[in-house]
Image (cartoon, rainbow, N blue to C red; front, side, top):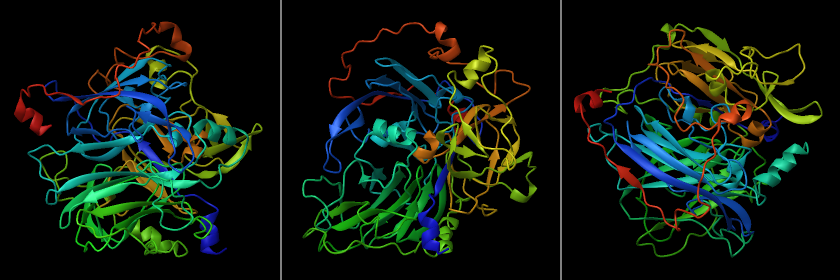
Length: 563
């Protein structure tokens, strides 16, 4: 089978390991940052066709959340949709606090016209992340936005301070909303080719005659000679995208909360769910604007040519519009090893300080005591009981009606099984089940589906798995709670390609896991415990919201700096 044909038949899957890799404790003296989010529908035409999209505070994409290492973050979410809502924050390391993870295994959905405050600490964390609605492929309609966590002032970044920051949300897009896409999947069909690729919620610049005149495109304004930190997030549905800026180099410096060894690229593959930071210097002449391109990978290039996102990089002294052919990726997917090698260049910068004042080291991988090994195998969707489903190790996950940790707290039995198989089930047909991984606090698990280079491997929350290939991940289980493991491709996730990991401390004394929050929502077997919430149907936002920052006095400053 030709490589191009091989890649055209399979997607690159991005697995999300949604649990923290370090442990810590909240200090009451750490500052608070508070946001109010009103999640609602608006009408937009990103590809020239009016459609219903999900906005946050009237914006599509939503506003950026900006905070600093160790800050306590509060996000009060108002649900103005016509369906229950959950927001999730992949890659955010919630110390002792899986109660705030924003997926069905950890939270009850927020009912219509209700509000809920997520409250967690950004403990020992820096970097580029994003938020999005987690239920029922709702991200396919929007509701996403960037999260920026800055270094504390006394912790230097491992490169000169950029002259500016730019967040780009890229992703494949359909002109049908999430409810229509769900119906397609529920009918047993695949979603098919997307209608385009958006950059910051906007369609392509008219780079050729196939692009309609009326489509609005994103313009990124820059000044010549300056260097910008560009944070790129693939918030799409299932398409891996190659990101590039015409005639400009991309200096990779960070991925999902870890500084990397700095490497220059002309283009870079960003798989679904992944986030990267690049430094880009505006060192070209201003004879014209330049293309910013996000195009589909691991597909038939000619057939998918129309599925391309194009924005404009505009120098303040530019003398004319961008024109001519779009730049092409340097690597060819028909030679898969060259594509995979790009990811192999991502090494952790072990000399750079991140969230802590001391340099960040790495594990001595050959000396780790592996307590368990799981081999996770993803297969193409198949029919189970007459319904199209996707599986991990032959199990298609059934979402719970009651969040797992809440069920444990209130002694609800029979909700799930701690029997997720550590190998693919070769001798059993695929099945529907609510089976999760049983893990022990301070263990160390190796998963061999979802091989990393020893010594300088980078810690991250989302890892790509190439078609027909495998990836190994080492996980330090130092955060008690229930944590989601899923395929980030929304169609496969919706069809059941996920599970959870329950990390238990047999000696739990209240110091390694927080109790349920006071504002916890109840549902399923515990819905009788939920009190009515009285909230006004009138928008509290009046079309405008400002960031509310409450800087608490930092007592015990030396302790805070150490932690």
